[in-house]
Amino acid sequence: MKKIILLIAFTVLCINQAFAKRARIPVCFPCEKLALVEDLPDDENLKEGTDFLNLGYLYEEYSAVWIPAWNKKGKYVLVNEDETLYYDLTEAQLAELKTKYNLELSSHPLSLWKKIGGKIVYILLIGFIIWSKLSPNDEDEEVEEQPTQETTE
Image (cartoon, rainbow, N blue to C red; front, side, top):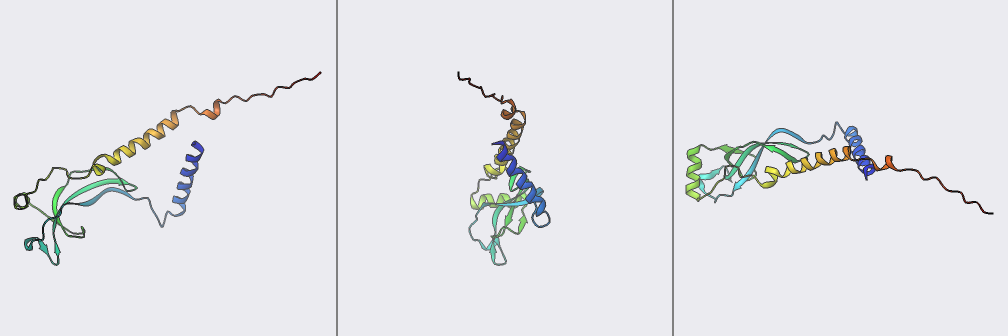
């Protein structure tokens, strides 16, 4: 089992070195992310150009290989339908949206995966690496058996 894991790790490292200029491991320290919180009704007051705006959440995320490790508290914003453009909201504007559309907003509206999912994956990965380093090596403890010779008379 350990040989297979080492072979996979070695292969990944070699591939990463071979394609280092073309493909890099995706790492964010930090990256701004937008998450859609509430799809608001199409209202002319919430229209920017041809897009209707929705309620979103802007936050900073620390991640590696698309697995979120940590995120900072963000703020509520208005986002376009493509989630590529956002507009800041003041506390008064946010309170007005809450009352007008009867919204119940939490202080940290991200999904469970974004909050703690990546942390669990990283803890399990680090635990597996530590366990594999500390566990006794079965191959070293094997005792070679000497063949017995039978005498026939």
